[in-house]
View 1 (tube, rainbow, N blue to C red):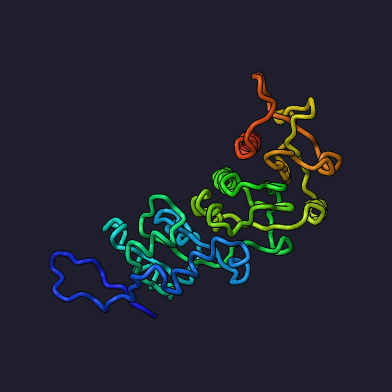
View 2: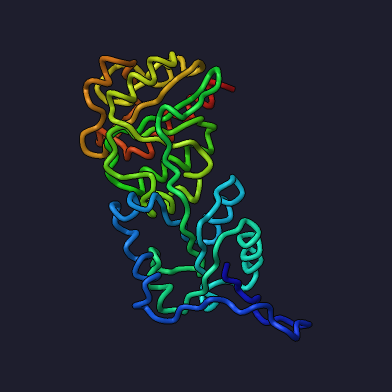
Length: 280
């Protein structure tokens, strides 16, 4: 395992063991990191990328164990360096990148010097375990990673037990999903499956399905969300597939303006917090 030396500080006359340091943008490691932008590469290696100190810190706190961590001391804040020792304690490889290699590997416009490769957080739907009165979020056909990540962040805050991507376009291991979720993709169980399989899974577990749609007179606030409930939201352009409407309770959010729909992440947040309100 490679070791990374601490930044120079007062009172330290001898640096610790030197780091493995990569300075070339054509290094195979850097090329591999860049390649993880492709879904096929992530699925081949069963990994995702966590970028950013705050995101990595939260992921570690909820039990994520990185395979490798890449740091750039030219970009990182000095007070974040102790996280290197935490990563070492977990047995992860730590590699130092120069400024240019790190910027090439980074997914951000303004990287902060922290990037980790971690196991794909996606579970098989059959492996998701629920409590007695669970609140589950189902996101069908979501295309934009930012929306998927934002919904996951809200779900974690609202106490949702699991988030299921039904017939997804964006995958949970997409680095932009991880980024938008602020690392909560490792805090809430996430799974993906075809919509038909998700409906059967919900039915087998006795969950009431509440489908967010503008095509109904029933308001979300008038639906009982206190029991075992799955909230279903649909894709950005098409909404939920009509097969969900016949399988659950259609419900809408009150809208008094000119627009007839909300951003899917906003809709999910409003419905989940109505459920949280009803549950006391």
